[in-house]
Image (cartoon, rainbow, N blue to C red; front, top):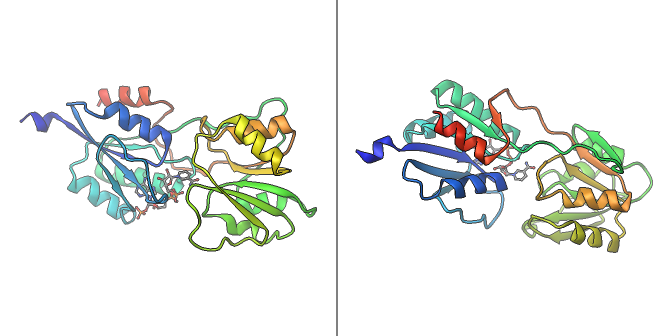
Length: 250
Ligand code: NAP
């Protein structure tokens, strides 16, 4: 009987915020939470709550998962650039009536000294690098590097969580393996040592990957920043505390 009063929560994860929320919910008697990873990294951090890995199979698959697992609340704590998953969450919540909230960190905004060019898609970022060969730090993950193949005049430094299993689609490329959070002093030294002249990044927001932005400011080098993709309207909070308050109010 006690179990039936427990709320069953699905957290769509892959971010530091999702992990922090999982930690806040771990061990609570009134909720059963499960964290969902897409499976993009080879060794995801084992969270302190049960977790599952892999896509649901589109909106229909997520709909079935919510129903089959009697989920009472859906929390979208995916990365701000995981727009497809977020759109699927909105659609599945609408159809099933499962309450949905997004836990999303605010975007970064430019500060004095920042030299930013903001773009919507990475092809525009590649264009913005210009014709003159440059040493470019590509801090955009592994999936969208192909946009820069059309600009072979640049030498690229790519930072990835896992060593690539296949050759990257870039001619002049060096790979750096690292998992955030990153420190400004470390990124500053790394970018200075390698003679980085421009940074390409996504406006992820949050502190974990802000080091490269601060380092670029300190080195007075330009940052080409991809704006966040559009996501269908949904209720959104910015902190774990606000998410817990929303859950308490259900
Ligand atoms: P996406 O384009 O929005 O999602 C593509 C597909 O991957 C989704 O339709 C879904 O497959 C599956 N998926 C995504 N997130 C999932 C999750 N948390 N649990 C289960 N399935 C998930 O997302 P993405 O950009 O590939 O990002 C994938 C994951 O990496 C997300 O969890 C995100 O938080 C994390 N991440 C992304 C970025 C980024 O820059 N995009 C950066 C850091 C971390 P089905 O349609 O089959 O359900």
